[in-house]
Image 1: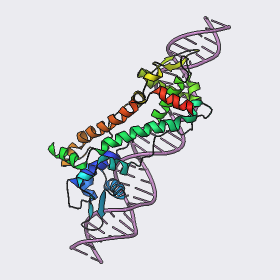
Image 2 (image 1 turned 120 degrees about the vertical axis):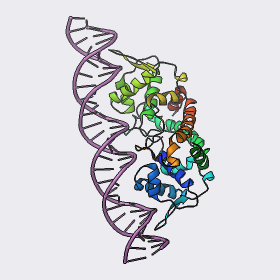
Image 3 (image 1 turned 90 degrees about the horizontal axis):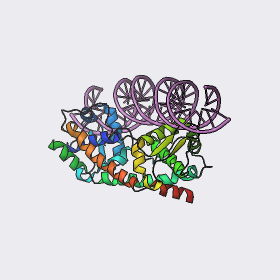
Image 4 (image 1 turned 45 degrees about the vertical axis):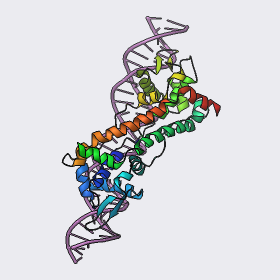
Length: 139
Length: 139
DNA sequence: AAAATCGTAACGAACTCTGTTACGAAAGGA
DNA sequence: TCCTTTCGTAACAGAGTTCGTTACGATTTT
């Protein structure tokens, strides 16, 4: 999993949009809740828009809104949208092909790691934005 | 998941040890298969030793060996040993507590992400070193 | 025309990661 | 005992990543 905070921030951003249904929310407003710069929010929202999860409107009175009901957006969709999955990361130097281990380690490990990553996404797919928002407001 | 290559390299290292059962393998030998510096290998092996997965012997004729049979070491144990799991990463700035979303986003998300991470580890726990080595040698 | 807002490029500071050198500690052999 | 081998670990540099920030054009409403 990525060591950055794009995923957690993106869920935060989406939760703010879900908390203002039917309205256009500005990046400034979202940035105030996330406590960061509006450009950081816009970058995440640009990725979410490319994935079809949010819609944007420019100009005065514009902003962002969810492209679907919160009950139909799950955390896996957000994770995929903001963390383009590049597969497992191996070191910069290729393993030694003269060693029986180094020769084939990449595809063998990629398969096992791929299954593990799929299991992680399957679990994220079970959680939807409306449940997240419900738990947030219950606190 | 971490964007580094400690996990994949650590599995490679363990596979080399599994391929030389009953012998003490030096960090130089392992580094030659991984194609990296011996110190990088020793750093990983130090973490694996702290987790009880490998044993080391200093001095002339020394080296590393698996502390258990390859069939009893799974990929989850290796992942936990070399990637001290620090939980989900949020941004450097704390969310705005005046916003109902920012107020409680951390624990709510940490729970969901924790379940997803547990699912990933459960899948890695099903894969053992002897299966990895078997697939490697079959190629 | 003016104001508001998104979209995106460019840049810097801080951080992370890998590789490298260096050196002490431990263990064995001559 | 002395020398060689090997681990254990600290220190550091270069590359890369990430986040925040400024800037500015494009678009939309008033």
